[in-house]
Length: 140
Ligand code: FES
Image 1 (spheres, protein in one colour):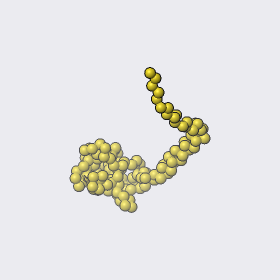
Image 2 (tube, helix red, strand yellow):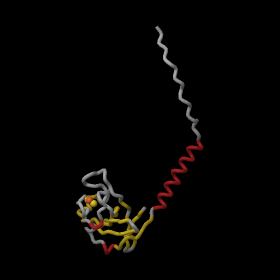
Image 3 (cartoon, protein in one colour):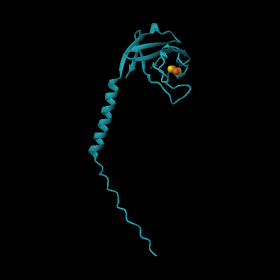
Image 4 (cartoon, rainbow, N blue to C red):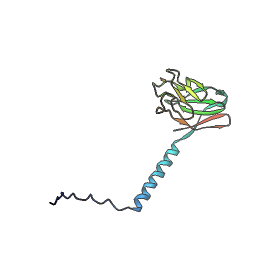
């Protein structure tokens, strides 16, 4: 006894590899990276004298808030809105490297932005540099 199976047609062949398409895809990725990089801007947010060691401050920038903190002399910056209910992280308390939101006490690592209660919850952190007496933050 012979079993015959219905023949299924082969899927259509994919388009042959095209070197030009690969080059174009690489070009677009490089172009997107350059655009992203150029959208970041070093912005003066405060003066060093305004931010003693062990403190966090809130800085308004348009509609956005940035929390800038001084962890043992290392300056750090993070998104100033708490992802829980929008509390002002810059008005919170700095304990070690942890910023505690003043509204419901969620804690965020000022280096990584991770929430201590739930590592899947994060706030954005931004690069910081000092120029003279000014604190500059690389904001998107
Ligand atoms: S708003 Fe920050 S913990 Fe609730």
